Length: 78
Image 1 (cartoon, rainbow, N blue to C red):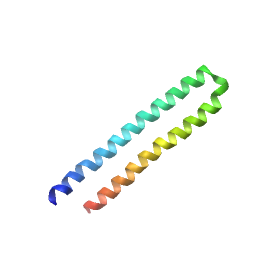
Image 2 (tube, one colour):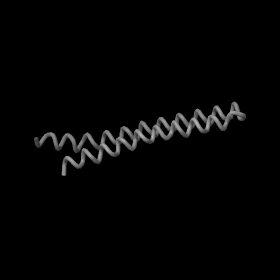
Image 3 (cartoon, rainbow, N blue to C red):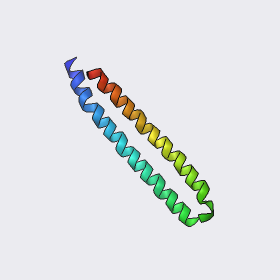
Image 4 (cartoon, rainbow, N blue to C red):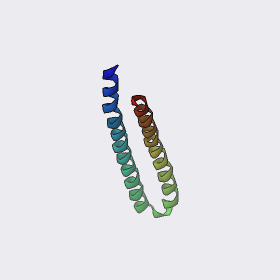
């Protein structure tokens, strides 16, 4: 059981870091693509912006779920 705690203490922060990096990459690509699309079609900027914000909210929700899982995993160690 001692190995479980040490593996969890290593895996939880690494998993949270991977989730944060993946989220940052996803949001960066989404916003970059939306800006490019708005530049090409300024008349559709409103619809593009709404879709981008909804997508960014879903990406951030997954990161928040990872943060909650991290705190739950760290609670198992204490």
